[in-house]
Amino acid sequence: MTRLNFISVALLISIYSVGQTKKQRVVFDNERKFLYSDSTGVTQSYITYFGDTFPVPDLTTIDGKIINQHDLQGKTVIYNFWFVSCRPCVAEIPALNRLVRKHKSDTTVFIALTFDTDDRIKEFLRKHEFTFQIASLGQAEIDTIKKISFYPFTAIVTKKGKLSFALFSRPIGKNPEEDIFNLLDKQIEKALLQ
Image (cartoon, rainbow, N blue to C red; front, side, top):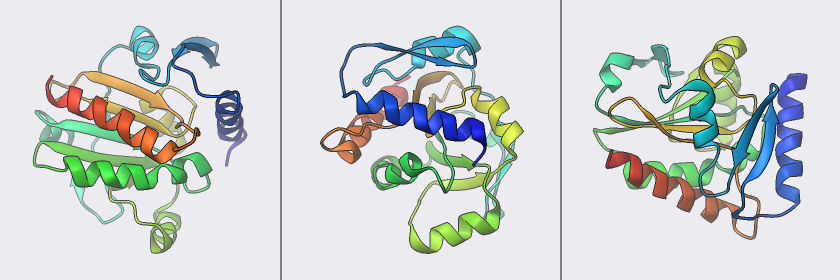
């Protein structure tokens, strides 16, 4: 884990250790101020800084499948950025798998992006089910896509190609798996209507 990633994960843990609230909190990343809420993530702040498009290059999954961005037009796409040694990333995978089971269709696509090597991911998948399509990119390329250093990071893009939701981290309240499922489920339902 790079020093920056470790710092980002440590910061997220400290943010959530002070407790869950619906109030907005201020979080800084790369000298930018983001307003964070447990219900809206960092969506508005993210769009203010980076716009409402979320360009991702063509991808090749660890299984060799090509994900052409042209083929994703007209589809709702849920991107999750994670890595194997990120405990909050791994902890949210069961909820993410439930979302795939509920929403998978010809018009909804789930893609997980990581900087881990294919071999490391495949070793991880021997012990953990992760039903997103998984692609590995270099750290610099991932940083260019997501533009924020925090992990895990989830972005939901509508069928019109517009970012509708951006969230980093995951709740660690009394039932974090249910909380992240409910939050993302609501945001996916909203994106499907856009």
